[in-house]
Length: 503
Image (cartoon, rainbow, N blue to C red):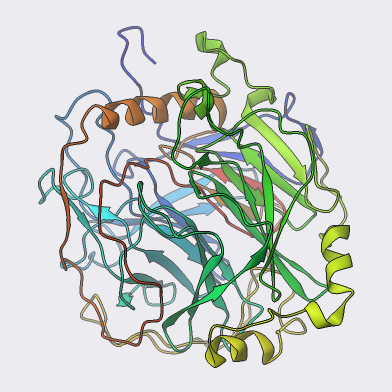
């Protein structure tokens, strides 16, 4: 915050070094200024292209924290190329000065969910209005379909149907022909799909399915974070969920959200980490490395009138118990700590999950929602093909509904040699206004959140602004659109050790 009482925007890209041990009080960030044209927006999606060592930045909306006079930049996609020192360079790949023009009939969305594999970036749902695209008004319009960026030819396609708000999405390459996308917590501010319903996108057939889960199912919530990681020896895939705003309630009488839940696949069984809750946290981000550690950054204390954690240097209370707003969670022992170990053990499921799968009759759900879902997860996982949760190598073709005048993307040849990442291999993290963790990003988010709460009268309607392709769709029925109030994008990028890039 400036001396005039206005909220400043930090347009830097910062990184955490994962090649060295550190504590949350000793770790230091390395920052690179973004070009003025690559303006940091709220809720940006980051997609990691491992073959080209690019991090693509897509979507997002302008902050009106200091007034409504600002204008959204022209639609574009920028790419960040990290170097071996924790810094790097930005370049525009789609847009006015990019390698190709941004497709004219695609609008920049915000507040959707995103994930990426080795060949594609995915963005589902969200909204558009004047904060995302300069050609629009204040009216929020929900965006239908799943947008896909082909990393090879930079074409954008729109597949599937439905609208989406809130929740999280993660790429699971271990199942199906080309892997699947798992979607948790589908819904809107006032209406959420319970966590016992798991949405699944078959990337090969481009069809949405759903599967019922069992076990210790989390309460409905928003503004939580998830990470996904594969247990190699157990041949399972675990999705860790942490924190959030439970049942959309804010204030001292709300439920403490210091909770970690784990969805284990292929059993589709929820487990809860058992530890005494300490400090509620929401609107934070969490991230895995190639070890058993999950890194959690930033957040809001929603039980105390949304005080932003890590902002004690500006007089905010209570103080974040984590130095610099950074915590580390051991996904095997299910314990939080204040330090990161660069040579920690590889991930293996916690004992409670190992014990569950020791009974081979429990490996799969007692009842599948459809034979198609059963086939996806029982046809045999690709554990012998996929070294970790992000190294999906199976080619796929994109939809014929292209968003540019170029040809339909061709299948990518998985035999093409891939460059080996240096020790500065990266994990992309989009935090708040795509800046840094801890106090500064929390301040920016706070100003945006308070501004929106004072202006909740803009109606939302569904409008087909983006092209759609008619395809079979077994995703649970769409929820009637309402105001999308979330202004923070939780990030889950699963790309090895080296450095964490903070955008």
